[in-house]
Length: 81
Image (cartoon, rainbow, N blue to C red):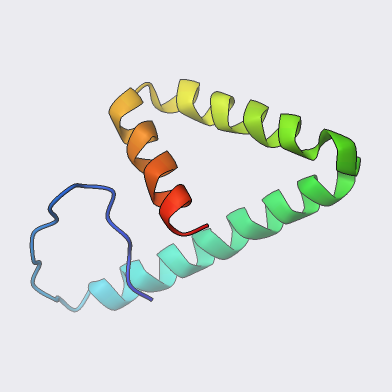
């Protein structure tokens, strides 16, 4: 799995022995996040799912305190929708 950069022009990196460990941790993290989100969305009534996801996005944005990063993530989500 290749990590997706939210930076406008990512630089090329050199592969090291720890990259495999980092990749495995990233995959495990993504799987845990996906499961948590999927289960939460399933618990929310269908008519409330969009407001729930908007609240979650706002809480996530407030937790990071970096509006440029959040805007980049929104753009990435739009591009992959």
